[in-house]
Length: 162
Image (cartoon, rainbow, N blue to C red; front, side):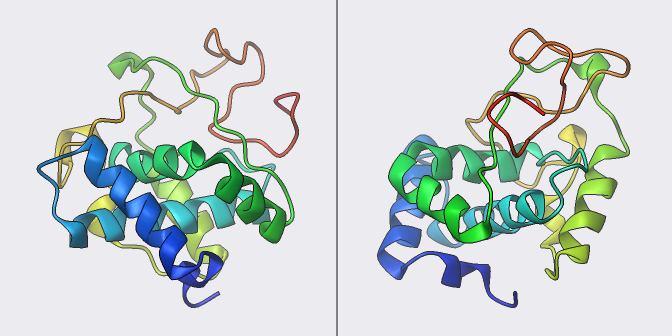
């Protein structure tokens, strides 16, 4: 899929971009557009590869949050992609950060047919821009957080966390 923006109408894409800007008033429109575009790539990859545990960067997560806030739009997007991609947030915990998770995620996004905007796929110590999103999706080895106990993942295809 060469242009994930085509998954949304221009008005819908603009609405999600506006939500990112509303949550990050100092952010310029071009950066917000990049973030939403990467979030769309992430959701598409998660839908294509539901059994692979992937996680957005903190910056891309801001775009995913904005998509999810547009519930009707997000539901229709997931229908177009063939499965619902759930969001399982956890409170941030630097001790739980998996340094390989972002590399794995980027590889899955590329396998899904997308080129990534690598500046937006960095770990917490090297973020391009600070964002309002404040949750973590990196699974704790051997366990999980309180929101989705025992079934830790950044996304899943079923409503039961599987």
